[in-house]
Amino acid sequence: MQDAVSELAMNARSWLFAPGDSERKMDKAATGPADIAIFDLEDAVAESEKPKARTMTAALLAGHTRARTRLWVRINPLDGPHALADLAAVMPARPGGIMLPKARGRADVETLDHYLSALEVNAGIEQGATKVIALVTETAEGMFTTGDYRGAPRLVAMTWGAEDLADALGASDNREPDGRYAFTYELARSLCLLGAGAANVSPVETIAGDFRDLAGLHRRAENARRAGFRGMLAIHPAQVEVINEAFNPSAEELAEARAIVQLFADQPTAGTIGHKGAMLDRPHLARAQALLKRAARR
Image 1: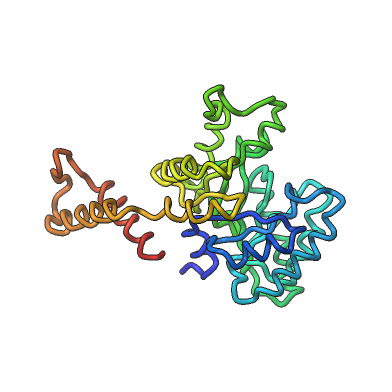
Image 2: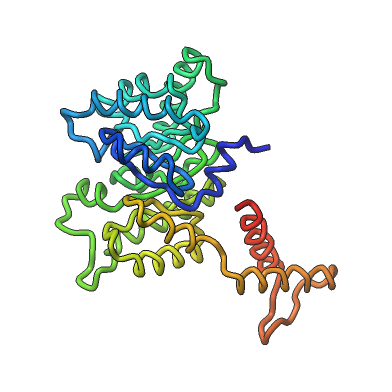
């Protein structure tokens, strides 16, 4: 049986970043409609401000005890100088989970698990309670290990990033002239989706950088849901409601799913069933059941 934090992460539609050095932005994220708020100690915080951000983030976590399961922290990369200090500062305040950036593979999640286990014992937290979402495509090395995460401790979700990957590759841009991601970055997206499927964790779509283009965000979020992603990262509060709505199946989709389930219930021995000019088989039934199950949890 999944615990409450794992269940939340597996069904979260919106994951909103808030900079760890802004009390106002963190508080707004914590009290807003995002399914999960991520207090960011990495990219959103300048090097000189990281000690202050740790203190502020821990204080915000401590002040929101009722919402703590949906308040997560993005630490700095494990191979840098800040990750352990980040964890030591925030773990006594009991975040719901940790986002691991620039994950190079399963070994990084296992190392993080060791750190978290020691810090949980020290803070009187049930061992294993703190869950992990890993950013799995931000390094060239990480691109080759996206299929290795099955059974990784604490892991409940995987997401991907295009900007850090472009930096790692020395690329001047990660987009085609028409605005689409170039092949390497679309590959990163697909590898994250496939890796999450192999690991049986939630795949989460990356950010949309233009927070003013809400119509474009809605289209992209809907496309991500149809592709199999369960949620999407957000960088601005205005994006949250759009993402939440896009990841909720429409009334028409729900009605169609119920009709498919009923067709197979009425013909329990059938392998395939004709429906609206097409042939449906058991994978169609499984997808309809999964859609209805996820919708019932929200």
